[in-house]
Length: 113
Image (spheres, rainbow, N blue to C red):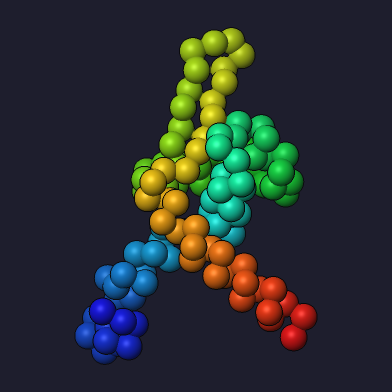
């Protein structure tokens, strides 16, 4: 069903596929995290934080937990000291990559307009 087909049929945008999508990838950092994970096979927590820059430890941790709960990020913890944790995209998240590429192309075309 298209967005137009849902208009007027639901009372709450969260009840639509669009609302679900926004709830899973919306916010300031989730798309950035997915973008960075798409560039590499696995990424460690500190590397993610360093690449993003302006994100706090707590916020990154929270966003990763939400992405993991939504089935978009794999978390692999190694039993060693100091702890080593790596993150990667799930197959479900990889289905978002073509959409993210389209968003990037839109940005290239419209950033300076």
